[in-house]
Length: 155
Image (cartoon, rainbow, N blue to C red; front, side, top):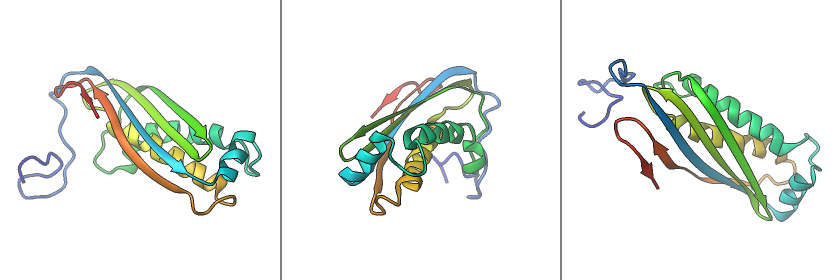
């Protein structure tokens, strides 16, 4: 099973040993989008959603999710996250979420950034589903990462 770090020689799942790796500054940026009707987007922008301030709740949910990624993704290491920034940009057809997560650690924060975006978008769906059950979440992806042995990467 060469090349797959989360599998041992027998093909069994394992948590990668990062004990010998150096602590370095690491950052990851991820994005995703929830598309919705113009009416739902307008209600979110106007603060007219019955459940409350959709963007504020989604931002907090995404930040919380980044901090709890290792509880959600079985083989992720718990990390000392030093910062999480979650930007939510609304337009006439939906909301784009962009998360930037940083740590000083032995492994990267790509999963934390992706989890922050995913949970923020799911929270928007939950809070606005009464307005538009046909909303779609897509395009969740890593935009960039820096730090660590593999260096920098940009989509």
